[in-house]
Image (cartoon, rainbow, N blue to C red; front, side, top):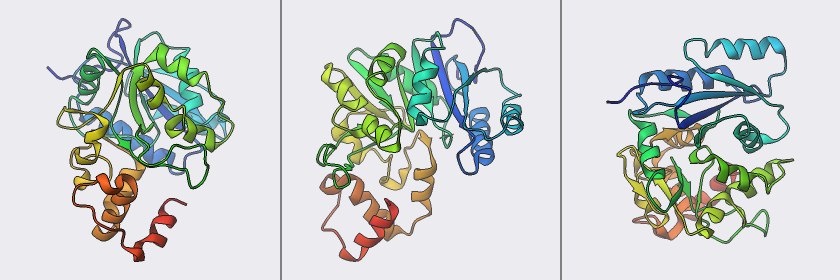
Length: 281
C-alpha cells in the first residue's frame, strides 16, 4: 500500500535528500512547490527525509526555510554554497546511513503517486546502477571540447537515485569550483552515467508509468522534452519551462536534445537556431 512514510523509521534503507538552496531565485516558492507535491503524492515505500540547507544569505532566511519543513519529520544537513548541488550531495552522503539515496534539487516537483517505489524497484534490479527521472542526449562539446560528442547519453542530475557508496566514490573524483565542474559530473567524459556504465551496470530513466527505459529508449519515453512530457515522474524548472513554450519551439528544443533519434524528427528549421541558442545560453 502506498504511503508517505517519510521519516517513519530510523532503519529505512532509503533516503530522500532534498536540496533547499537559499541562493536559488524564488526559493520559497520552490520549496513550497516541492513540499506540496511531497504531501500530495504517496511515495509507496518508507524513507527518511534529509533536507540539505545551503546558500542562505542570513540566519533569519535559513530559519524561515527550515520552518517550511516543520510539518514533516526530517533530518537537517547544513553545507556552504561553494560546491554547487553535486558538492552538497557529496557532503550529505557522508552524513547519512541509508544505502540507497534519491537526490532531488531545489526545483523538483513530484508528479505522481508511488514515485519513490518506482525508482527503488528499478535500482533494486540486478545489474542496474543508476536511475533517474530524466535523461538527455545533449552535448556541451561546442562550449568545451572535453565533452563527448552527440549523442551524449546521461542521466540528468535534477532527480536521480543511486547507491550511496557508489555515488561517494564517483563524486569524490571531482572538485566543484564552478558550474562547468557540475556539468562535467553530469555529462562529461567521466560522468556519473559513464562511470556506472563502465562498471557493466545499466542506467534507466523511470517514467510515471513505472517502466524503466534504457538509454536507447529515452527519446520515446514521453519524459524529458518529448511526448508532451506526459510520462514525467518528477518535474523541475526546465521541464516546466518546456511546457510553457509554443509547440514549434517545443519541437525545436526536442530536436536539440534528442536530434535524429526523436521519433518523427526531420531537418532543423533554420529559423529556430537563434532561439535554441538563447534557450541554452
